Image 1: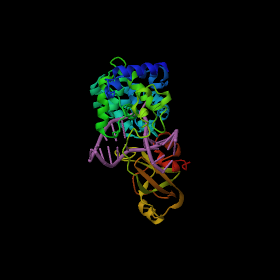
Image 2: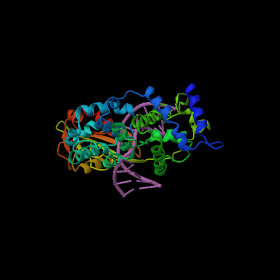
Image 3: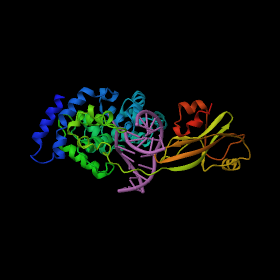
Image 4: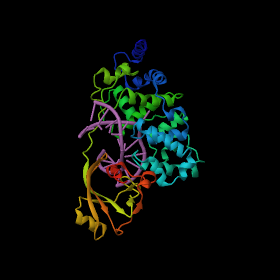
Length: 366
DNA sequence: AAGTCGGGGAG
DNA sequence: CTCCCAGACTT
């Protein structure tokens, strides 16, 4: 390809005679092929077509640790229900969590509302056009602040996510652990020094896009389609199977639980989880630690009798913990001890946000 | 620096 | 199964 030859020639001119090309010159050489590739190959995504600050913000929060395809339907529904910052600042927590149900990392939703209220109270209801001010808002860290600043406002600051860490560590051939904060900060500094001042949005999104569709997270990179292949150290040295280097994560714990579908007069019991921790503020079926037998169930519920039927066991895997659940359907004649909401199957479907961990039992509620 | 926080797609 | 995803926050 002619473009790659001219790029190679350019590298030769940048390269000090007899010395290896240093990281900074290598990164500076990415600019033209990157921007040109992005212009031609970028995907059409809803939040890209109309990059208003509010839309960029919501999309970037949803995209944290979440794939593009998973976000699309949630983004559309969210923008329809809450079209502006004012709407978000006033939405009820239950309605907000229902909009977020199934997307995961529910503190993202709660932080969105917190930030929206701050924006209304202190920023005139608009997102600030400042990396530093954006980063102060709840739920917005260094990546998201950089993404919103560059994409919505054109401010030349880097936006280093997992994609960018992978692409850059391969381009410069770094075997440092990309999970270390110091390594991430270092890459942010390097990029900040070489970023184009007038094309921050395309530059950042281009790097991210390459990471998402070419220099992919799972499996071998598609180097024959990569605009950066001619200057990539990992490719040159056949290290794409080694780089990026990441420390292995710890095995998750397993917890035993007993889930109860309590029925009383045609309604089923649910309760709201606490406001912090796993699945914070979402609803759940009553459940207890450990695998309870029938006598222990009655004791837990503080009732003398109930028509108890065993349900199929199920397992749910979170990132760092898994639930091993046994379950029972219990038809009650008297109100059990404990603070429950007695709801209809229809209300569970339409009003209350129940996490997927209970899916095996939600579908049994008819 | 290490833990916590979801759910799903891909290999 | 394991790995990872347009990460942030708490301890």
